[in-house]
Image 1 (cartoon, rainbow, N blue to C red):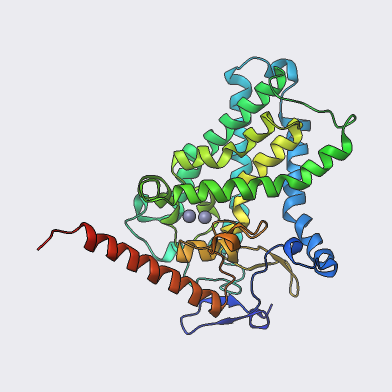
Image 2 (image 1 turned 135 degrees about the vertical axis):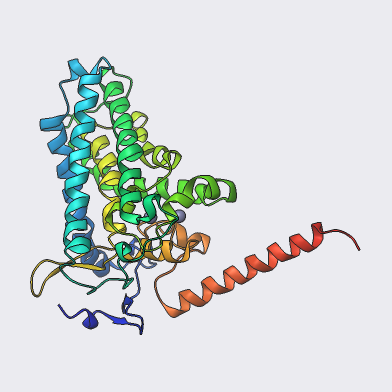
Length: 341
Ligand SMILES: [Zn+2]
Ligand SMILES: [Zn+2]
């Protein structure tokens, strides 16, 4: 595909989309029904539908019977961990293999023209971003993912969470399933803001931001504290009336859903003339500029807090002005607290 029909490439070879990133169209006044209808298919396809189906598949084939879940036992927790590990390797690995190892589409639609494997840095374990990112995901990411999954399933089995059956509450549960990405977005936005505070950034979140040029393995390259905060989104389903399948969807939305945002390409080519949108540019800009796009634009929290960056020059100017004011405030504080001559 000709990526220059959709964007532009600078002298260094970095590609950016021409179109601005749009916030989900629900917040326009007056409501624009046409843009909502245009936006809706992308809400389901392909990513969210895949994560939802993966939750159903887990419930059908992987999660043990409720009787077994009632008691914590290493056997079923090990099985969950093993399936989670294999699933992550297959799902994340498929993108890594195609786009980063085989480089099947070269740098077409790639935001940063460099491939992490070509730029070793001693900021990473073994000086390799891929190895560092993979190991962090495997050593603490998937185990913490599994622990959260095990706790929630155990709680459901022991009637410690309000479990609604699909037969009894199909409409409510369908609506709740539609809101899973919204719950994720609001949760992620606030924990993300929290870990950008100076102390937590330095000791926790900087691990994730080491990958300025993210690739699929970067998705779960986090400090264990961030893993815990990130996956704790599943715990909301212990409080709100829900169902284990929707709770699993919430978890998979976090676990598998992290990949599209870190894929590094705007579109994944699937044929000569067709491609799947990754919607990765929003979070790519967060990795590039650090203090913009704490969320993904599904809920307009970044707009409300003045941290939204839609990829345009205007957004760049607003961001630079914000950084300049922040710098000024920091210098003023330093002057005030400095030694009196
Ligand atoms: Zn990230
Ligand atoms: Zn961040």
